[in-house]
Image (tube, rainbow, N blue to C red; front, side):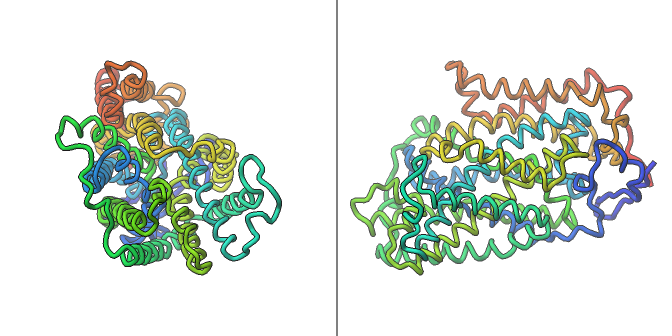
Length: 499
């Protein structure tokens, strides 16, 4: 049996990996990170969230809410509240990453079983592949405009459009795709360095764009004086509830797989403070910047469709200075790159590795993510802001909320934060259940998903769909707790291995 070292701040690590190294569930990328190799600080976690929040979809979040009838402050309050709520499961599921040094799919083995963990892992991975494709297409567009500012004939360099897009635009997309994969191949330390410098760089450049827009418009513009369409709660509620669910859905992915990052944390306190300070504030401030810049742009470019000006790349495309366009597009490229790798590649790379540990490494998993992201045709996935919020974000939030409910209840209530670390990597340990599957977790997840999604097709129950994340999380959590009480796994839940 492997010995376990318990640290004063609750961190745990195996003294030896000899017992589990030959297991089909083990590879070096999924192994617990030794405490001696954990070097992420409070700043690293704050920088991670700042760089992930500073992306085009965040900038455009308020566009979808304002176009649905909200005024600027209603939109920003909705964004702030949604991100404050989703911070709770993010922090709850971050704890085992720092305590045991394990990534998300290995953590999921405790509740779903050593093989059953592939269900939540692959559900999360599919969503990430879709996001990867969308962000990569946006980054490729920015790179395309960037090259066009340097080489005036870039747009038509290789002839007419193919599939509705210029050949050089496809090349820009593939170049940006390759940069993402290259960073993943270099490992998590390079990712940490990219996030560290990308966060302040993007914030400063966006602040400069904000200052320019306000100066040119001689003020903040008309959006900040608009009253919006909703003046009573009865009018506001039908839009507010699904919008709030959509805001939670925006980071519902990270509420599951934060152990992929917190496993590198030096202490629980540092990772918790870094995330709490950065996530809700940055999302709201960056969305506010989007509102103010667009509001001013409507004044600067009268007669231009406001929907065009909500897209920062189309806004920058109206600038005349090649230097300004180049700097602006480089900023968009950096912002998109930092969020894409952290939010959409790290998790599915680990998830695919978890499915076949002996054949798929973290690097190979990242490559698989990139290929699936292309096959999902992100240029077709991109749609109008309301479809993006009320269909894409709300729909998958119900499924991921169901998984989060199971994970939180299992770790904090059923097991009281105690895991048998070595058994997470063996086929015959505490988490083998029945053939490697804990049917209770699977049933609870199905119940959560069914209740969250039924309102999409059954109109009288549409209120459940509006609250998809809440319904999925709550129903799955209660179902799992009840099933674990009524049908206690055999052998009974084991105590953690002692040193």
